Length: 206
Image 1: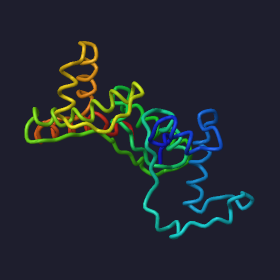
Image 2 (image 1 turned 180 degrees about the vertical axis):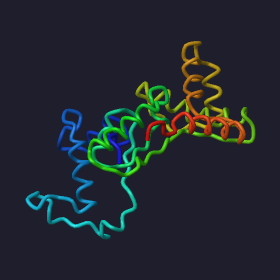
Image 3 (image 1 turned 45 degrees about the horizontal axis):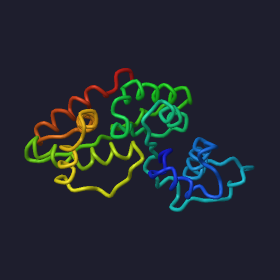
Image 4 (image 1 turned 180 degrees about the horizontal axis):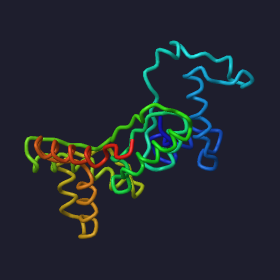
């Protein structure tokens, strides 16, 4: 589960209607209630205590939270959930210390299980580095423009290349930086970079 609904602010408002999700952050409470429901853990006097999860909770494999910062890591630890660290969302702020925080809160909550975590990355792989960067331009351009409030349909790499050529220097620099934040390249290049990130984010204290 994750905090963001995955769309624009308008679609978030539509999903939350008739409430106002942008004014009230109910996610921690909702996450705790969902965990209690799936684990059959509501107190007997809770308003949802008589709701039962099918199939039975003991058939559930595990619960994970997707997040890109310390807030989600702390909540996941407090609820005994695994943490999927969303490097594809915030590659420059995701650091191994977020995993450390998750493990610390998990221990403080009285849970002895080994922290379950994974690193979620944006990866585009092709036969050559050049081909991969060409293909990845579609995703990089979409992310760059979405950050500015523009949500066009996904464009073919050829169209993106034409738009990049017509960009001013500042926009081209931003586009290249967005592209560089992804894991992009040949199979050998991607394997090497993924292994480096795995080593960087591997457990140091747990």
